[in-house]
Image 1 (cartoon, protein in one colour):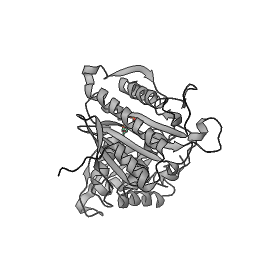
Image 2 (cartoon, rainbow, N blue to C red):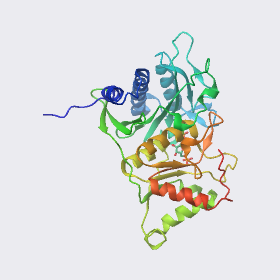
Image 3 (cartoon, protein in one colour):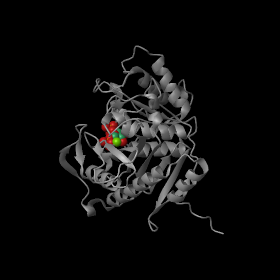
Image 4 (cartoon, rainbow, N blue to C red):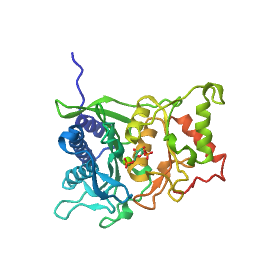
Length: 345
Ligand code: AHM
Ligand code: MG
């Protein structure tokens, strides 16, 4: 007898039944996010034929020139999610302020945050890119919705995930009960469960970092990478391999699939910024997924999920992946308390 395929819908309903931890409104919200990802996946796949490649004339709040797909993906997510009644508001890496659900629609109790198109520099060169999302609950006692309602530590997330648009389109999700992966079945138009209870090996011999920034790193990061590069002849006594895709979604997906460590550390190029990656749209959802799969995530000093944000677009230094390697990098920062890396974010 053929094994029955488990759709995302069935997986979520079973989570609701067996763990009782997934309220129906949250399930519906996640299904809408997944539908948005399907739509973005279609646009990505069309490439030049769909007129979606190239840049626009506009800059986002981060001061980055937006790609056409950054804007398309942002619009798809806003339009799909604002009318369903599950959400109170949304926040996006591509928008300066929060997006309130218009008055003509019912208001829900959840807050949705996203990086609509992660890895923008890879869009035009046909390399894997993705969408990252995080769901928070609006604080119970707050009337209306404000930006402050979003400023919650990552450990309060109620769902998080990403969709990677690569050779396959894969949705990766946690609702706090392990990590599951779903592959888009393009003929059926649905996400099918292809991996459950994902686990990351605690040890690894593969690291991911943008080596071109080496001269700007702080001492603990230099020390860690130097030791990896010394290989079997050095203090680590083993050879390391390097992978760097420059799309966080794709680098994290590799780590969830076979282990590894990913670093995007603070560096001296822009010393006043805590890092390049954004805490609420990138680091928090990825850190929760990694921890749910048995890995670890810190900013070199503390657990990323414990950082209480003070601003929506706050940046953070990121070290995540196989537990023992992340612990090693973090201990190098603790050995070097006078280092330059800001511990505050
Ligand atoms: P984006 O969200 O604007 O695409 O920026 C985030 C990306 C990450 O996916 C990736 O790890 C990093 O930026 C690569 O940056 P760089 O090539 O500047 O090192
Ligand atoms: Mg990004």
